[in-house]
Length: 225
Image (cartoon, rainbow, N blue to C red; front, side, top):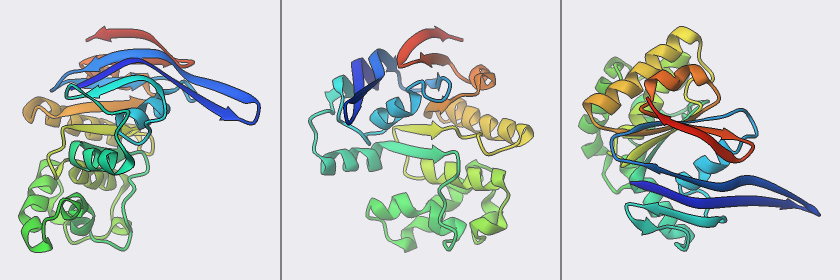
């Protein structure tokens, strides 16, 4: 599904050049649970932006479903991103003055569905993460773990090709983190959902089928679990 070939990324600030990705190559196959791990500044977030079609200013190649993406314009990349990727962020990125239902249905509305047609789909997504009873609540009425469950429901509601999770347990305590990771694992095993998770927390490696370690812009290690 995802093939990254010798990708390099350099930021230029004034006379300074920062080489943040250095000949990075790897593959993600459909149905895998891949962890991209590394400390802050290792390049994993930059790599996430490329995988998520948010940055096409790099050297090398990124193929998605066998097609090169680098030369696509912003509108085309936006279309691919909205159709193919479900995003989950550390700080949830929910809209506080929207109900849970309204937050989760956003990808469906972007895809052209009317609100009248989204309720059943939203409810099924919330059931899959264990909080259908929260459909009419607001984010401010939810715990951190419940907010992340809503974010996961929003990520899967439009049946994306893969979920891209950025430090999904970073704002949660250890017990809640385990609950969230179990949801990802269940989606991966039972629904065959492809998951790419970016994190600094190596304790989460046991949930992954493949782990890639980023160190100073290099893909230093990789192994299947």
